[in-house]
Image (cartoon, rainbow, N blue to C red; front, side, top):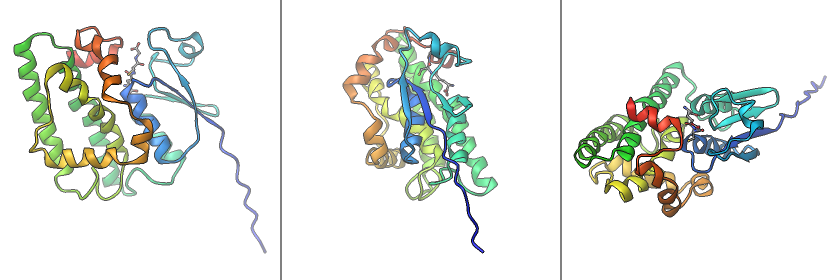
Length: 237
Ligand SMILES: N[C@@H](CCC(=O)N[C@@H](CS)C(=O)NCC(=O)O)C(=O)O
């Protein structure tokens, strides 16, 4: 007897995004890595349309709609996509590995990116130099504990959600270099090699922007006037 399996077509994916936003960039990367077709609505962060604020509980991008499911918060969207679309898997199969991945994703949001925003927003030269040192300590931890023992990516030979949670911010370090003279230390060898490896991925090439784009879009941040609440909150953390 033949078993007949009926495959239900997946409803379309719609991503509300903003090109400049590193959190939305995470989600675009995940969709590209999983080769999922999606419709994209670009949101003007300075003039959010009512159609978006009606469905967005925090009035922030990214927000994903998948049929009648709405998901927001970039790291939650990444995990949703990995569970809803199994291949290629972007989280380890075992509970310990998944916990490790989630701890690094939490580190990206709560330990790493506040320093990026603090340094970018700070106007006082002496404080900038202290913040640069603190950021370097965080990067050294990522270099040693995150990447020091792996062959290619954060969790091993395969790309994972952890790589996608960190990468968009590292792509925007060009802004720290331009406005604050900050460079990732040469002796963060693993981090620099990982960055190079990420830049070679088609998903990164297809979703990224030029240094000039970021430098112009982040000029207000560097002058201490971010357009979004997140950098202000991170800067106060
Ligand atoms: N924790 C959120 C942060 C998202 C976020 O801050 N998005 C910014 C753009 S990068 C935004 O939509 N800001 C609009 C506002 O604050 O008015 C996530 O991970 O998705």
